[in-house]
Amino acid sequence: IPKTDAKETAKPPDGDKSDEEEKEDRAAQSLLNKLIRNRIVNNTNQVEVLQRDPNSPLYSVKTFEELRLKPQLLQGVYGMGFNRPSKIQETALPMMLAEPPQNLIAQSQSGTGKTAAFVLAMLSHVHPANKWTQCLCISPTYELALQIGKVVEQMGKFYPEVKLAYAIRGNRIEGAIQEQIVIGTPGTMSDWLTKKKLIDPKKIRVFVLDEADVLIGIQGHQDQCIRIQRKLPKDCQMLLFSATFEDTVWQFAERLVPDPNIIRLKREEETLDTIKQYYVLSRNTNDKFNALCNIYGAITIAQAMIFCHTRKTAAKLSKMMAEEGHQVALLSGELTVEQRADIIQRFRDGKEKVLITTNVCARGIDVEQVSVVINFDLPLDKDSNPDNETYLHRIGRTGRFGKRGLAINMVDSEQSMAVLRAIEEHFNKKIVKLDTEDPDEIE
Ligand code: ADP
Image 1 (cartoon, helix red, strand yellow):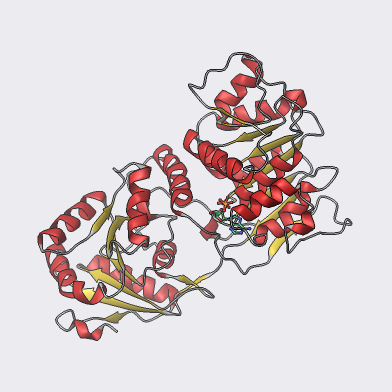
Image 2: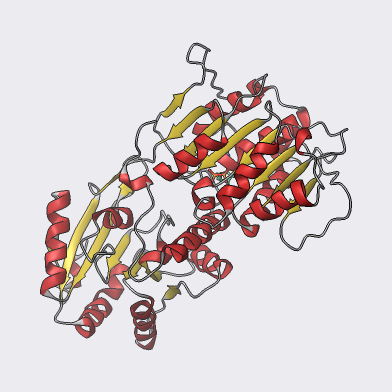
């Protein structure tokens, strides 16, 4: 399998964050993306396919009808407002629904339709007359498991004979599970299969592992998944999904999924071509704050996002701006995921004009409508070197879908000037000085 480009791999932990906290962040980010996303992420790239049997023809579908789904499921799919399969679904669905079942490892960024695809596969493969568990779906956390369950319920709305149970901590069950689909976290799932024997592993026909990249970051999860997988019949269909594909994910996937087909969809490339980049020179942090207040009027013509390096700076900035009478929202790591989702939703709905946030907190969140990005602090990696990748992520737009944008970088020391120059050189794109005494300069 080809190596991923750096963008798709996990980023180094931020500042003083430990690895463990970083991994927890990934689960939170994933949930956050699910909570705020209401539509498919566009992608014009071609899917890369590696077939287990390279001689077998590769099917891809352009409509859901071609899949010859049960009418109740087709109704469910249309009921969700899906008109046609997403890019990854075009190829993944025929593979997952083929007879005999095929194993699949699929990678594509969050929001491209993986969950909807495997939920449809699970619903298609169950025999509702059989009152025992036939599909297992593993998810890294309780909250993410519930999100999958919601999709099962929506898609299976017209197929009420199929029932769903959650193998999550605290869910006490007496006697064998009768629900055809069980979604859960690795620990409890393993418990139900082995210790408690609530599920007969030999009767499982579909085994799904979602968010493998998040999952392998959590202590003990890998081993539990492997323990579960070993108990399943040889002909059980194994499906593994991941948003990113580092080497560690790949190694895990290979151990878990024998003879897989592999599908990958690269992220849409980001570019700085449609972005005007400026910098503002200040003497110190206070001066930066004043400069920001000067341009507040100009930036709030559109929506703006302001990035700070630490939670402390972000909180201070938001307080200072509020005291000046400027309305700002603060997205901070202290908030629960639901609170964060709520703030991002308000911002997306245009109820908030300016969103102040930190690097870690905003990572992996795409707020497409933002046309002004302000780096109150320039992005640095964990060794305090210029972080070009994060810069591109914050400012860049995907070529096809991107609107024009504006980036303003706040510089307040020789060091930060050096960082700016390094970024300028890296992308070979001029960053122009902006005079904040004359904000009309901003177009
Ligand atoms: P992923 O699992 O890759 O993050 P999801 O399956 O959660 O992606 O899909 C992301 C969003 O797109 C969801 O809101 C989902 O309802 C929607 N979606 C999925 N497939 C389609 C489709 N074929 N057409 C329209 N919307 C879709």
